[in-house]
Amino acid sequence: MTFNTLRVCCTLTALLTLTYAFLAQGADDYIIYSPRVTQGQAEVELRGFNTRDANPDVNQTGMFGAAVAYAPTSWWKTELYNGPFVYGPTIAGTNYSGWEWENFFQLTPHDAYWADIGFLLAYVRNNQAGVSNSLELGPLLEKETENTLQRLNLIWEKQVGVDVVGKFNFRATYMAGYKVEEAFVPGIEAYYRPADNAHQLGPGFSGEFQVGHEKSLEYSTALLYGLNQGAPARTFVFRVSSAF
Image (cartoon, rainbow, N blue to C red; front, side):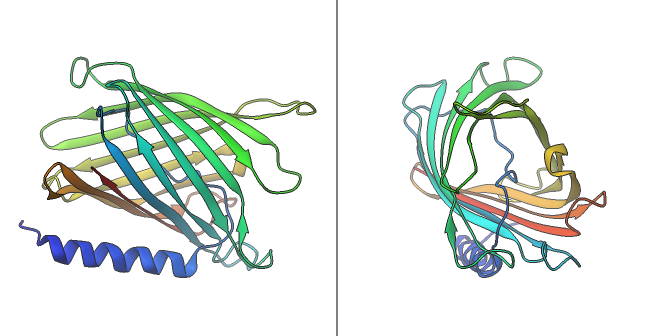
């Protein structure tokens, strides 16, 4: 299959615009991280999600946000995520929920072991009244073969602050895809979010292609279906990033 770069860029732009048109309130847990770090690489990222549900308080809820990242070494990438910006049926207007400082550590060389292993350490600064700041940490795993790609994130989150007492909340994300080519990897995505009483699974596709000398565009999207009563009936997830 041969992809026309201009056609793909236009398609991604249209999908991103559609995402923004329906974004609303929600937690930003719909992301599956890779443990890989490329020294000297900078990155700009946009991501968001949108829900559909019979419950009017849940229907058309979601978020959008943007991030910039840089990898000063071969094993550490740091990223500042601004947002998410949230709005929806239960709140008035558009709300800025805060920012997140994410740090990714590549712990093993690529393809040196059965899976690539990394680690996430992030600080979340919440701007919403009554919502505490939090820490996120956990391992990031990736297994790639000539024809397949799998990623698994195991994340623990804990609220922090002088008056905060509580346990770590766990969540897990997983993706598996078949590489038709680097620019098109169809597969599945799964999200286990017990803190929100939400278990979700659905088809997705992702890919990466070159748009210039040492520049690339990476994207992923999925349509998730709720597996339990607490999860939204459907959630559309989208992410696009440019590395240079």
